[in-house]
Length: 411
Image (tube, rainbow, N blue to C red):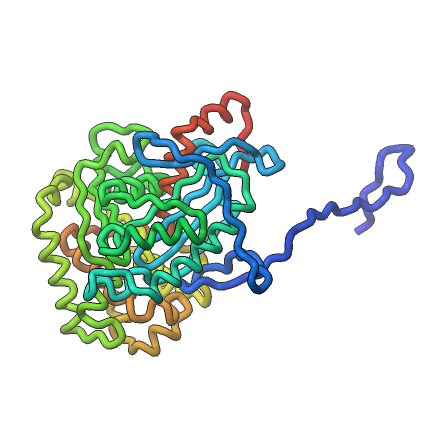
């Protein structure tokens, strides 16, 4: 086809020159959860210390501590960061506000550190586990040092809450990385999980049970939307509980490498007994039998199940986050993974060696939740505490209201 003619009098057009932004050299790595490759900074020269971010003085803001910091990183972007050190994972997100209630991630990091390894038996964080966590947090410190942030919040959960030497470990983290982590209580953890998943709850939902299966604890929140609605999903929590069990602690008690049907059922019964003591578990009885009720899971367990269900050759967050799974599909996936040997689980690209000994413990917790609150559908969330922290910081600072007034919404 001939090229389209230009306007009268136009001469030959000069080819457009592509503008290329200069970028620092990056190394792409694959984290231990089989998730997409993340950007990690190049290792410093031997003997060189990682730069420590200057984050200012934290201030109390009602819902927790976060550090405000003005500045735009040389651009018009307003940036926020959220770091979550859990019993099993260390995760970081840096994001800029987008449309109301939403944001765009500009940097991320995730690494399995197993901070809670051996904690159930000894009551203490082990030296190798602390070393792994500090190494991961040093990477986070480097990343944070590269951004000028309007707000940052950094939290630690069950492992640091329950370990005898949790305080000593956090002192070491601040000394060696410059990061001051805040140990949050279980109620705050449940609320942040709900806040982080709010964009996945549709208008057709009257009630849901949101659960976050962690490494050392599992948070469960019952959300009732049947009577009235406010913009904040966390306002509709009618009951919540925190089970003192997660994938790491349960696998250590019952075994994770070799899991028989008998030992799997024993894990399910252990969690079922804990759920039976939850007094507020019936607060959604008026909607639980309807089609407008469902489960919403945010954890490595449900994202792993979703990846296996989709037959992914490599974990793809875009296909997993927000996926609906029917009851029969979940039954089939749990049955499939339960029938695999440890080596077969390790060979699956959505499980991998880092989760092969934990995934069935997570499936047992999920199964106990499904039996306690039978639902035809489960929505999968590859989001949680970090997204909840980001949403709460941005809402508290009024960034979406300000952007609405000036009429500027980033993609």
